[in-house]
Every structure is written in structure tokens, then in C-alpha cells.
Image (cartoon, rainbow, N blue to C red; front, top):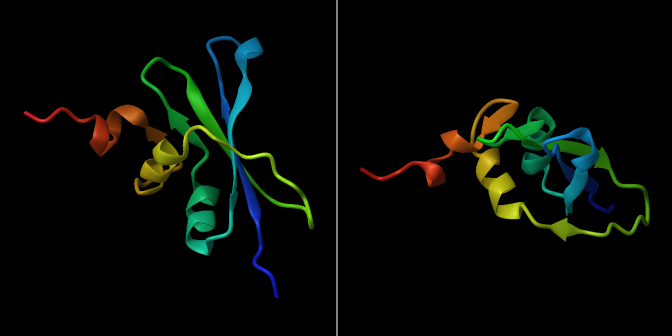
Length: 97
């Protein structure tokens, strides 16, 4: 039996509504990642914009055009708790004193 595939899309909110666009798309098959991504819906930037995340089941034999522009940021946010993660709160953005 084949693994269930999911499509994760990240849409940048932009500063105004006409700037909204998909900037990240990838196929996810790891069950632990799928469970965490189901809980997380938004990555909030310090400038007030956001990366809005959606996760859906891939259709059988669907070819997904991947756009892996934010993979490392999304993976880092997956390690945090909550449905909305702020970039300013991530360990990688904290200044070392």
C-alpha cells in the first residue's frame, strides 16, 4: 500500500490583498509532520505579514509543482508550539548576548 501524500502550501499575505500569492508548496508524507502541520496555520512576520499554511490530501497521481522557498523556516516553526508561530520568537532569530 502506498503512503498517503499531502500538499502543504504557504501563501504570503502581503501588505495589501492584491499581493497575496503562493510562495511555498511541497509534498509531505511523514505522519508526524502532517499532524504538526494540521495544528499550525500561520507564521507571523515582524512586519505584520504572514505565511498562511494549508494542508490537503493530494489527489491520486496528482503532479505537484513544488516551490521550496520556505522549507527551513517551516521546519523550524514545526518545532515550536501553537497554531500561530511568530518569527521573532524563533531561537534562530534571538540575539546572543
